[in-house]
Structures are given as structure tokens and as C-alpha cells.
Image (tube, rainbow, N blue to C red):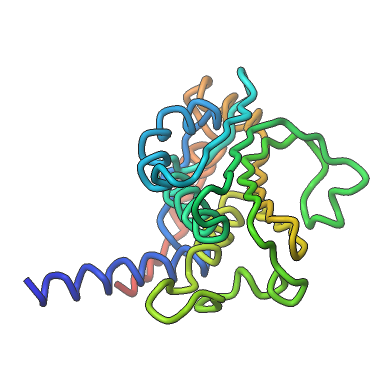
Length: 222
């Protein structure tokens, strides 16, 4: 039992590090974020417990985004647990979904211009100083006391969001709580490919096969 428990902890750590490095295996599917949160709400409420108040501000009929739903749930849960630790007993955690359009401010956010859907978690805790905000997504960085956190929650979430072509943003000041925002691009192109049943990748693969003189070398290190 001890050996199995240690192996499980090692596997979980490896998955989190791969997510931080943006090398985890994802299964992206068109996902409506409000529906995902509603379907996941029992787990969220159970994780927060009765001592923390939960407020939902979920926009209906949002456009879909291309994400791995299970990985997104894990990222959201990590952010929720950080918010729970920040607010303590009697605090408030708010989950928001909304659509955003980035134009002039897209480059500053290291994103392309266009439509995005945001999934936000806001807590009314003590907030973070600027130096803590700057390091919050570093792996193994944590302000929690020993034994209370690995420092991989936000790192994993940030890596997953970037691998999904989005961005994780943190807004916080001491005494004003913290807002964690996950931004994902609207999946107009992906949805069109799903409906047509023939993606660009499939077309490219067929084209490659048509050249008999070419060879494909596959290197697999695992």
C-alpha cells in the first residue's frame, strides 16, 4: 500500500510537471465553459467546504473553446483550492464566465486579436504583493507553510492554458483579494473542421502519402 501510494504521488507530480512544461497529452474538444462549470459544481462545492461561500456569475450560451475538459477541470480545481486557502473561513469565492474581444490590448497579453472566452476565479482574501504575483506560476513556488502545498497548482494551470493557445492572468493587490483569469480563443475554425469531417491535418497526411519517394522517420523516446 505504501509503495502504491508513493507511485501514485510520483505519477501525479509527473503529470503536473508535464502540464507546466506544456507537454502533457491533451484531448481538446469543443467545450462550452459555463456548461463545464455547472457539470463540475458538486466537486467545487465539496472542495470548498461549508466554511467558504461560493458565488456563480456564469454567462449562458457562450461560444465554445477547444480544450481538454478533464485537464481544464483539474486546472480549475487547483485554482479553487488556492482561493480557499486565501480566504479562510467565511470568505467568498466567485466563479465567472464571459466573452471578451481582444484588439489593441492583444499584443500586450501575448495573444492574437480576436474573440476569447474567460473563466475567472476571484477571492476576497488577503491578496498578493507584486513580487508574489510575478512568481506565482513558477513551479514549486508557494507562500503556504510546509506540508500545505507543492507550489505546482498555478504552474500546471498556466502550462495547460498556454498549451490550449490561451493565457493565464493574475490580478491582485495586498488587501484586495486575487483574480485568476484563464483566457481561451473561441473555436470558430475548429468547429468548422469538426463539421466538415476533414481537418487540414488529415488533408496534409493524404498529400504526404501520395509521394512514394518520401520517407517518414518517427522517433519515440518513451
